[in-house]
Image 1 (spheres, rainbow, N blue to C red):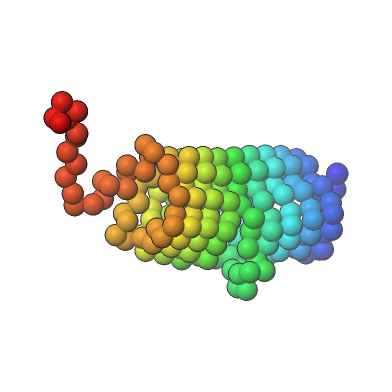
Image 2: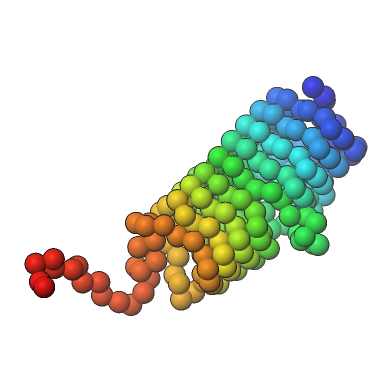
Length: 205
């Protein structure tokens, strides 16, 4: 286990139960590192780069990430509540793309306008998350709860929402080409359409 210091390069290190709090600023470059049960609540992670890292059972709620990037990094069983991801460094997306979120809490977070093609948001609690204007092409949402999350002019081409639940997505306001849905949750897509559903009367032949 290593001590987390700022403004340094870190390679192949494990940080366990390290805590940074509100008002503290972390700056550095991390490659192939693992963070286990660490706390960064309301801290600032500024102009840092996390390459091929893993955050496991960490709390990053309300963290600020100005200029930071997370290429090939994954978050597992972590709390990431209320994070605005838009100030991060998303340039050269194909190199800066994070791997995704697995069994995490992402509620009240913002991804407006970001290019997140191909990431995983699996088995997460994502209540009231803002995905408007985002490119979510081929994003895997399997098993994720999307209560009151916002989709508007969102590109969901080939996205996988099978086993996702509680979503409200207007087909007329989003690109759903070749997206995957499963019943009965997919019935929610009809609620935004100006149509009337008539229940079939099996007694009529």
